[in-house]
Image (cartoon, rainbow, N blue to C red; front, side, top):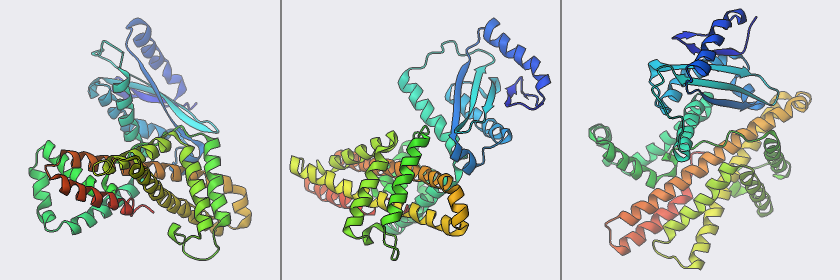
Length: 382
C-alpha cells in the first residue's frame, strides 16, 4: 500500500496510503488541464554509490530532503513561499536513483514560463548548490574546515589588522564586505568559494577514475611517505598521466583546469606578456596542478589501502568495486573544487592588480609575489 509519491498541496503533505491519492490526482489534473497553470518539472538524481554513501536508499530520506529544500526552489523561481505547491515521484534504480519534481504557483502570479538561458543556468547552479550542501554535507564540512584553517593563517599573517576584524565586518556595507572577501581571496585560494561538479558523471567514468587510482596503488613504493614530492621521478610521471586522465574524464574538471592556466597567464601579463614567458607560466601552473592532484590521488590510494586492510582479502574482493567507485567520486569532486578555488583566486589577484593605484613597478613586484603564492595553493586540502 506504500508508494513513491510525496509533496505538499493545500498546505498539507500527500497521504502515505496509495488509496488516498485520488483527490491529489484530481487536484493536479485540474491545475494542469482546467486552470492551465504553469507547471515546472525538474529532477534530482544520485548515482548508486552516492545513494549508499549518503544514505538515500529510502523514500523518507528523499522526502525530508525535498521538504527541506523546496523553499529554495521556490525562491529561485520567484514563487512566494505561501503559494508554493509541489509533488515528487521517487524512482529507486540500480544505477541511478532519482526524484521527479513538479511544482507551481497556486496563485498563478507568474504569467510567462520562459526563462532566458543565462538566467536559467544561474538559477540551476544556485539550486544545485543548495541541494548539494545537504546531500554532501560531510564533504562541505571538510571544505569549511579548510577555509577556517586558511583564515587562521591569514589572520596570523596580517596581525594586527584582524584584531578588530569582527567590528570591521559588522559595521561594513555590502560593498565593503565584498571588498574584504576579495582581499582574503587574493591572498589565499583556500578561502575561495567552491562550485558544483557536474553530477551526471557516469558509472563508466567512475570505473576509469578508479582504474587510475588502482594503477598508482600498484606502482608506488611499498614503504615511505605518500607525498607527491617524495616519489621517484618515474612514479611522478605516471601520477601526472593519471592526473590528466582523471581531469579529462569530467567536463567540470577540464573547464576548471584550463581556466586555472588562463588566469595564471593573466597575472603574468601584468609584467611580461611575451610568448616565451606565458609558456613558462602555463608550464608552472600545470606543474602546480599536477602536484596538488597527485597528492589527492595518493590520499585516495591510502584510503583504499586502509579499507582493504580493515575488511580482509575475502570481503575486499567481494566489495572492492563499490568502495573504489565511491572514493573515485569523492576524488573527482575534490579535484574540481580545488581547481575552481585556484582559478577564482588567480582571477581576483589579476583584477586587483589591474585596478590598483600602485605604481607600475610596485604592481610588477606585487604580481610576482602573488604569482609565487600559488606554491601554497590548496595547502590544507591534501
